[in-house]
Image 1 (cartoon, rainbow, N blue to C red):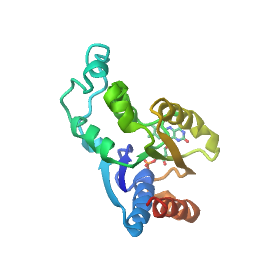
Image 2 (cartoon, rainbow, N blue to C red):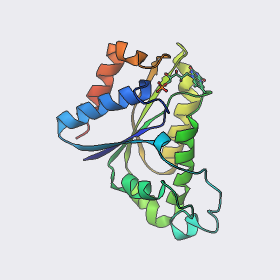
Image 3 (cartoon, rainbow, N blue to C red):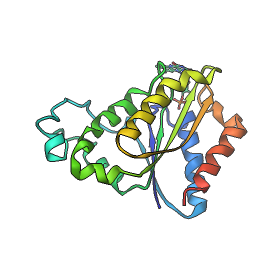
Length: 183
Ligand SMILES: Cc1cc2nc3c(=O)[nH]c(=O)nc-3n(C[C@H](O)[C@H](O)[C@H](O)COP(=O)(O)O)c2cc1C
């Protein structure tokens, strides 16, 4: 089992990062392989919508940047953890830009490769009313449906200050358990 943790927050050791680490701790205990990437450390340009001529037909994106090696990483992963803070009721720009570049997956060669992959969504937010994360959850669910992938689990947790989520023992335990079961 290969697990890929994708941190879409710019804050290292922030709430998203901490929760992803906790899932990966469970993954490690379960004996599965894992890797974590920080989107904010990478140069990933926004989709330029060349796909009708290019990525959708040829199966790869024309833009030569740090997204290029991530396509194979995604194909090789059985489980992908998408982590993003709630920003204006949606994902961070880092995560949205990353997901937009999945348009290359519309190529028939790739549709099959994404089919059935499990996704975990991790989304901390400041508001105490967790329904503020619902537009984000809907966006991810719809996108995964489109790819025939599976929405496996989600952690939506109220935590505003950097690192505050550590105090939420229930959320930390939930994250660890999700990781532990990924085998
Ligand atoms: C640009 C920006 C937009 C935000 N928008 C929201 C929001 O719409 N709703 C909310 O509850 N929190 C919002 N927040 C707060 C973050 O979601 C929250 O602090 C989160 O825990 C940060 O996670 P991180 O530590 O992983 O970066 C926003 C924060 C920023 C910087």
